[in-house]
Image 1 (cartoon, rainbow, N blue to C red):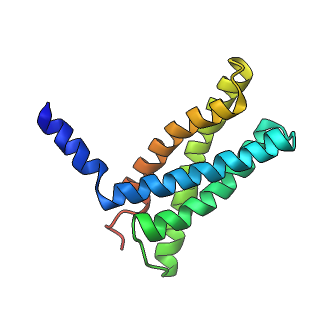
Image 2: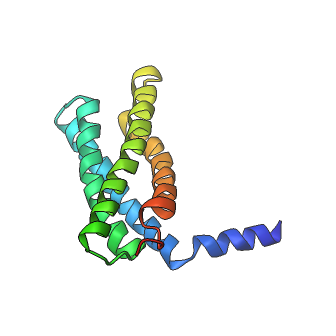
Image 3: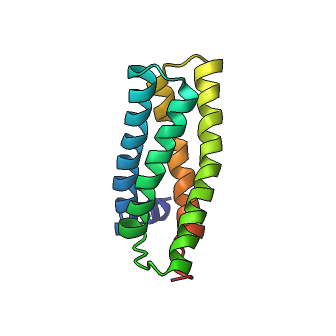
Length: 142
């Protein structure tokens, strides 16, 4: 058991994981702030607010993940467009989870919007890390 805890600690404290967590938190802040502004301050429907929040967060996340987390410095068209399209494609998968989770928490359970957004974003961050690490910014293509 002790070895597993040490292994988990080492994984969580790698420079890549710390960078991912920092930029993941910033991306989540962008997502929640845009959602809150659109939904709560401007009274937009949650669906439209969530889509705009997703789009702006994904644009921010792509560049921060590419440059600072996974350190994929190539801007060669073949590499860049593969990363961009696969990043957005993977994020479409997490968007589906995001929209379904928001529907469940907002429309079915009637949870406050900020709490729902925070809960859903926790799971989205995990999904996005796995897809980014294993597929999108894999060192095999660099």
